[in-house]
Amino acid sequence: MSMFDWQLETGDTVVAPHQRLTWPRTVGIGLQHVVAMFGATFLVPVLTGFPPATTLLFSGIGTILFLIITRNRLPSYLGSSFAIIAPTIAASASHGQSGALGGIVVVGLLLVIIGVIVHFSGIGWIESLMPPVVTGSIVALVGFNLAPVAKANFVADPITGFVVLVLLLLSLVLFRGLLGRLAIFLSVVAGYAIALARGLIDTSVIGNAAWFGLPHFTAPTFHISVLPMFIPVVLVLVVENIGHVKSINTMTGIDNSPRIGKALVADGLATVLAGSGGGSATTTYAENIGVMAATKVYSTAAYWVAGGAAILLGLSPKVGAVIASIPPGVLGGVTVALYGLVGILGVHIWVTNKVDFSKPINQFTAAIALVIGIADFSWTVGDLSFGGISLGAISAVLIYHSMRLIGRWRGTVTDVAADDEVGPVVHVEEIR
Image (tube, rainbow, N blue to C red):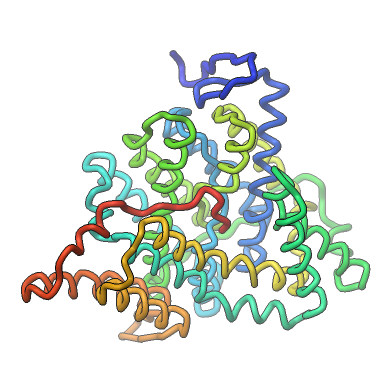
């Protein structure tokens, strides 16, 4: 059977990845995926200063590339990764956007290499290198490290920021189903309308922007000094991809574990492509898992529609101008919650995997890594500069394995392997 020969499913039962509904219904589901991913995807370029239209374009292209590489068997949307925000902001400050793009390209290349290794050897070595206490610590410190960025945006316009934050919380508890999952998007739209009414938005740029045209492209430059900022992000993207595949396994009843390597390679290539032209790093989106959980439609055909729609949005400078005009106050209200939520995702990994924090190894692995990441420790060696995220990630790995090795040698550590067996897990309602 050809990769594009989806079996038509006309009933109201679960629609598997290799099946599809009628094309009108498939288009409808695909557009739902666009709305679900949009709220988080456009925020990353706005927060990092990248062109939103360029990021949307590469997001759509990356999604289609992912579907081709996985032969239409893994329903996934590749949106902007929040894990890339902190290193991108830091690298842009020292080497401009092109320097940050070089870091993103390296992240993608490393993800491709890991994907190839996983394809032939499985994920056992990843689970041994990064047990849940390490994985959770790294994911948590990536989110909490961004707290000062959220504060800077919030204090720029506290009134709008507070209103947006309240609207976000109300949307989560007032609405069910898809509307509940679009709480971020709805709060940003409402905040934008409030800021517009208060005269805080310059609409002249929007009015002058064309409806159709190519977005702004930027070529990457490579600086060895920025690499330590970006390398820990690779670990987060690995965790997200593995967790995404495991979630799909649970929902569909299909074992896609042999496809994890291809998923990592596809996401890596999509990130390389995006970084080569001015877009943000990509990652599989749990927001779209929420849509699949609600509709029971796992057809990859819907993701072709979503990818195509994202490309069309990326080819509209006017859409990019609207996104770029979002004021800091609106972003501050949203990111106070979002960055904290990324941090809490790390805590969720600990809870899901039942990490035993009565053990000193787990206590100090998490404690030291979090303080280093949140306080944003830095260390410069020659041309290399290590920030809080890189130092925190390195410390989590080194502390855990050093204490475990020495403890086993001295006989002071027992039953540590129990925490290594479950592996990284990402919650299906993850928000980047």
